[in-house]
Amino acid sequence: MKLSIIIPCYNEKEYLAKLITLVKASPVKEKEIILVDDCSCDGTTELIKTEIEPRVDRVIYHATNMGKGAAIKSGLKHVTGDLVIIQDADLEYDPKEYPKLMAPIVDGKADVVYGSRFLGGGPHRVHLFWHYVGNKFLTIFSNMFTNLNLTDMETCYKLFRAEIIKEIKIEQKRFGIEPEITAKIAGKKCRVYEVGIAYYGRSYSEGKKIGWMDGFKAVYCIVKYGLFG
Image (cartoon, rainbow, N blue to C red; front, side, top):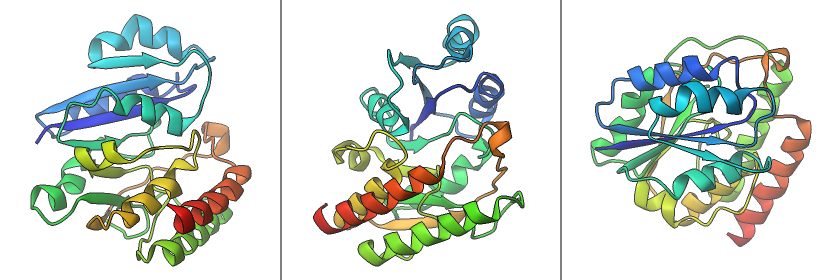
């Protein structure tokens, strides 16, 4: 199966080149890399144009900053693979784990696979207690509306059969895409699996972007898409 890797990117000059190296070295033979630059302003755009463009299959440039959801939506328009995974442009998630995420779909058991940071299965940086509490709350709250029993709804690593994610009409432009997609795949009665993954979390001083306001938006999205689809 061919794996399409969508990398939404905003202001990741420090990490992006190494991330691309890791993605290209990941143990999946047939893959394509779709990089979406969401109007970076820290030199990332220039780095992509001078060094990274020849190393990936496609680069999409946003003229204005629109958010992670909008970047994923742009990337999906160019997917040609059988499977699609979202890869953040930092180094929090390890591309070596793609085969682990792919396995339930390749084996014919799943339609969607979430990589859970809380199931175990690899190193997990110990920090940001209240961020952890927020993640657990949002996951449980989401589960109440979707009737799924996920342990990590907010994970970046979500892998889909391509035809499923292409059928979903994405509305959210920022981090609200996580509960939106979760609600919509639950509504489609997809077979959802989780696998434990490693997580090399970074601090806000190291470039982490999601904030408490995104948590409130996630609550809104959980209710909106949980009740109305």
